[in-house]
Length: 349
Image 1 (cartoon, helix red, strand yellow):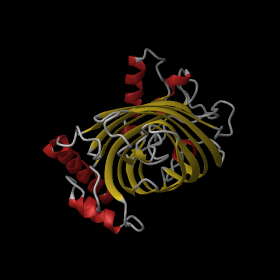
Image 2 (image 1 turned 90 degrees about the vertical axis):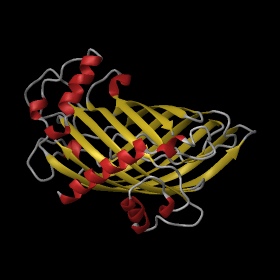
Image 3 (image 1 turned 60 degrees about the vertical axis):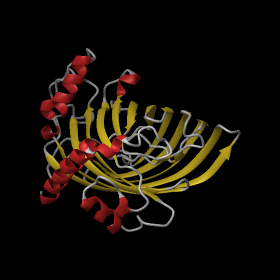
Image 4 (image 1 turned 135 degrees about the vertical axis):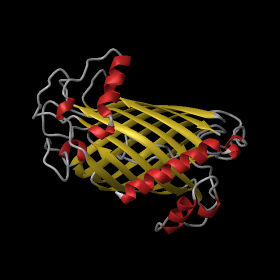
């Protein structure tokens, strides 16, 4: 409880500093410097004309301006700098440093939203509300990141009200079974990520391709898993650094690992493809509550993921659209694959 209250206090202080800091606006027109940025992410399965399993996700993120070491991070609380220096393997020569904070929510529902009774052979109603703090260091060839997630599962996540609001906006079916949602439980997770760029090709002054090997481990009662994958980008004036892979809270990590493209005065237009394999020991959305009896379904331990993305970035803002699909991850005929469409928008200050 003390850790959760501390994270909440630090989060509020961090966001206030981010909003009211005048220096964030000084770099808005200079894309050669990665200034502080906001990102809003919206994930939903309506893009696939479905409404089951992970149905929706929302995230509001802030990422600090790029710095040459943890001590020179601008407009962040002192604890952010101290913790960045204290984490193992997070400091090395030739890296740039950033920190992020995110508020996120994820909603899961079974296939039949009209039933009020417990549907034992489908995934449970579940909602998660989280605060995530991220520290990451990178250059154009490697990425190192650590993320701490604190949150709550159950009615305190406000998922029931969020989904009903979203469904009223899109004139969708009213979900009737939220009385059967997973019970309230505090969540704590640690995520560690490592990326290495293994191939870069330049075809002319603007066209390029890169290939990244990604490894990621998560430990906690939100997710306990290990993942490895390949990330590809191809297109026009691609930013240096690393692709952000859409994260419906906890499956990956929140970060903004960009560096200036070859021509910072021109926009960037590119596509991406991500292929990933994950081994799950625990998934709160399928295994249910860890410390209390609850509804659950038998999950498959190995899950494949593919993400196709389309990206536009300019000096002040960027917009990104992704389509995400997994292999079947549960042993029930009702659930099927996870499929989400995601849109996230970034503003640089």
